[in-house]
Image (cartoon, rainbow, N blue to C red; front, side, top):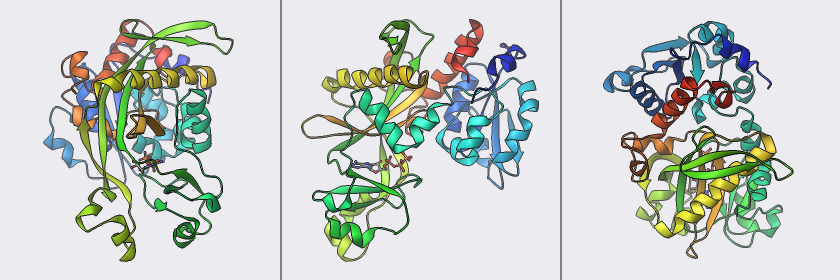
Amino acid sequence: MGQPVASWLAGYDPKDLTIATAVSHSSLQIFHGAKLEGFKTLAIAAGDRDVRYYDAFPKAKPDRILKLNRYHDLLGMAEELREENVILIPHGSLVEYLGPDNYVNIGLPIYGNRNVLHWESDRDAQRTWLEAAGIRMPRKISDPQDINEPAIVKYHGAKGGRGFFIAKSYRDFKRHIQEGEPYTIQEFVLGTRYYLHYFHSPLVKEGYQVELKDAAGKVVATSTLQMLSIDRRDESNIDEMNRLGSLKDMDEIGIPPTFVVTGNIPMVIRESLLPEVFRMGEQVVKEAHKLFGGLWGPFCLETVVTDKLEFRVFEISARIVAGTNPFVGGSPYSEMIAPGLSTGRRIAQEIKLAAQTGQLAKILT
Ligand code: ATP
């Protein structure tokens, strides 16, 4: 926290920036977008990670691949990388590989607000933020004995839905729970899942405008909000369970449902839901401004839409999500903003605009 970003940036050449991220997740998309906007690119790979797949995608292949023993080694190389005017683009895997403390303390300019991590990684803090923003979340069930309708049990620190389970009663809960593992329980919301990919810019003033206020309610800045694309995740094995029968059948033969993300499917939603999509995004960025100095760049609201056409948001991701990957060449929404606009490219455009107008310190932390 409190990194001397302004002094690092004083030594940067804004015409010769390098966009860097860790291999995997959405790195192809990030590099593809950065190259289209004329940036140098650097991939960071640790251990024995196989990076040959980049050879298969020449338009996204990074200019250089930095091979490390451990991602942790990046911390000791910050000064050297600052010589190359490196800007780090965070994605979920990068944060996971580095670990939250290393990530927050890394000595490189990061695109976005690095302090959002605290609000995002703790499910209770996330709920405080989203509910203060007027977002409806699945009901939290504090006592497992109160489970009397389908509930989803989420272990803390479980990644990508691994180990989650559905319980329809306290008995069910007792049968599945792993003792000693901290967890939270939420109402299981039945409906269709949509993962909404937003982009919030403090630099651009045209488009869907947002007024950011301070705690006293005074407008202190205006910004713009975009919604670039929507996906739905393909989750194994829950999404294919019906091939073998019902959830109950599976339970009887001892195969529990799992929620492990294996891919992403492009989606569009009913146009009549778009006002609510924008209202939710707007409220989230306004509240972030009040609570912790703002959320800008890409973020994603992970939602379920019920048959009453109401959204429930079960999670926020405060950076690029892998669900944007189907849209390297643009989405049905981003096409109405600019041709071929992916989230990766939008990030590069924002950094380019900031570099050209002397505003890098506004978007890097
Ligand atoms: P990631 O970090 O990859 O986003 P995670 O481990 O934080 O995943 P969640 O995103 O909270 O897990 O949930 C994983 C999946 O479980 C969701 O994609 C969704 O399919 C399902 N899910 C989560 N919460 C609910 C809910 N309240 N009702 C119905 N389904 C849910």
